[in-house]
Amino acid sequence: QVLAIAIQTRTEMPDASKAEKLGRNGWLSLAPWPRLKIWGPALVIFACVAAAAVTPAWPVWFWYHPAAMLLGYVALMGNAVLVKKIGGLRATKIHGYLMGAGSIVTAFGWYVIYSNKEVNGKPHLTTWHGISGLFILLGTYCSAVAGAGLLDPHIGMMKASKTVRYFHSNGGRILLAAAFACCVLGWSTVQKQALLPVVLFTIPVMIFMKVLI
View: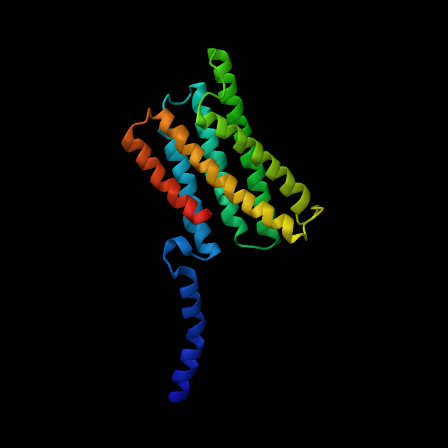
């Protein structure tokens, strides 16, 4: 009987260790797979709900700007970060595909706001949101090109360089944090600085930043 208890305890130890690893500090510190399953859909749902709340609403041309930025940075790039945390060749490739798709979507979002201002005769880059957004977009595209050309598992010219990986990873964290902050500035403008909508938008964004960064 003592031997049976010892064997059972020995068998259960990995599960206890795994459970501790998955959630020692709650949902914000889950292991990569559970984190993706929980926070991946949450990012997509948040982006969709926020886009649906934008005024003027679809199909007004301006609506596509915040909708594209939410889809690109929050839903696509946010999930790209979660997938990369899993590790391995497949996760790295999917990370690259999602980042590439996010970059294309945000480029469309930039085109929307640029063309909308041109049509309405409004000046460009007159707010902190616009100025910071331009630099964030440029940084995003540089990071995407560098990541594909240097770190792709198949064709990356410097995929084994720890230095390049370090700068790409940490630079990406800075860019994503800046992009989320820029989204808050844009949301505040769209909502005309109304306190409640801004707070309801900012709190989830801060939680996502904690999870991703």
